[in-house]
Length: 117
Image 1: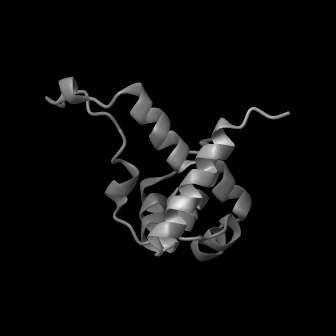
Image 2 (image 1 turned 60 degrees about the horizontal axis):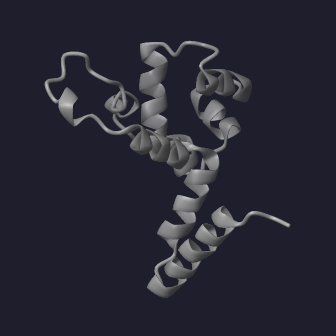
């Protein structure tokens, strides 16, 4: 998700890390494990702290279990982390005119509710 948010291709990330874009794909899909040193390199290239990649992990020792997010929140987070969700978020964040932002939101709602012919 972070790679998409900064607008970086898998090829460019691989180039900056000294690996192939296929290896980046395998990391992103979870086919290959990411070593701690590689994760550190990735965090540096993407401009985040290593903790960024762990923020969503559940902590079994967490005393706030009663305040856990609902499944609906998980679905929203998942949608926002998808490539399409990132693109929509980027479009909205780059639109400074409030009226245009409302138009974008209304268009998305209309398309989501569209049942087709």
